[in-house]
Image 1 (tube, rainbow, N blue to C red):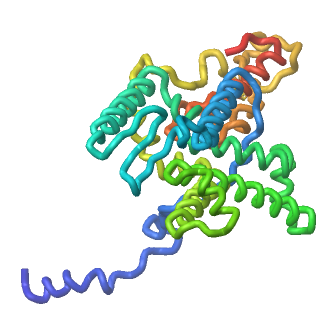
Image 2: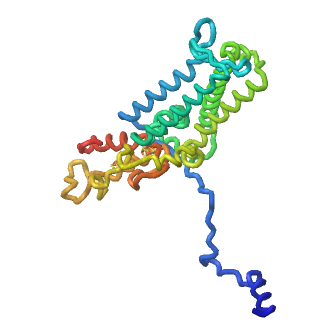
Amino acid sequence: MTQAARAAQVIRPAIEPAPPPGGADDTEQSLYEIRRKIYPRAVHGWFAAWRWALVWLTQIVFYGLPWLQWNDRQAVLFDLAARKFYIFGFVFWPQDFIYLTLLLVISALALFLFTAVAGRLWCGYACPQTVYTEIFLWIEEKIEGKRLERMRLDQAPLGPRKFGLKVLKHAVWIALALWTGFTFVGYFTPVIELGREVTALSTGPWETFWILFYGFATYGNAGWMREQVCKYMCPYARFQGVMFDKDTLIVTYDPARGEPRGPRSRRADARALGLGDCVNCDMCVQVCPTGIDIRNGLQYECIGCAACIDACDQVMERMGYSKG
Ligand code: SF4
Ligand code: SF4
């Protein structure tokens, strides 16, 4: 190759004409998916009852445990300053760290086992992100109304009513989030003492930081981010797929029964119309906290909460079809 040819090759990229507008080279691929706000419809049924039972159970334990007294001291207290962990009648020292390691190993293995056997049980029923989102959504519904009312409110221009409802909702969310932060710190500082300090506005810098930090995380994750945490932040959501096998219990749609989907009257003979059992009502999509359509197959966004099963069961019942 001559020197000129080499030079021409080097400068070619700079002097090449720009690709025509609208051409394939012009396409820009955004790496950021614009969020579509999800307005989950409230749902009732067998699985919703289980989810709420676990919300109650986990929250009674979390909020109540620091207040429990045991032999004239807090029953569960992780006293970091004194390097002593009190758990009911037991006192653990730093050299007992092996027990914590053992507990964490057993917990991790149990989580893997449950996921392999029963899918995303943890995500759908016990994960704090799910539990707090459920509570925050419940508050939102009580203040702003049901799904359609919430959608209309968000689309409406800002007026006194909308402003009042939004302020009230966020005030209740923040109060709950701060109470959560206070409770969390109450596992590390004697809670009664901490309560006195909070009412006197005399908490120390670390206590103040952790109450605010934990409160802010609760408010942000359950009030604002919600399904985004499961979709983009949680590593567990990403690697659960590899623990599934053909016997894992998953929430899924049965196309053999549901397809071809389509609306019909309750009295119509679906088979004579050439239809399956899915009436295409969209209820399973409307109740989904992650906003997916389970009829498109298993998706990593599905947290296995089974709200879509509860919703579809209600529809099947109304149509006079078998549930499940
Ligand atoms: S709730 Fe059931 S019937 Fe309605 S669209 Fe979903 S799968 Fe079909
Ligand atoms: S599709 Fe949605 S509603 Fe159904 S189990 Fe998954 S996350 Fe829950």
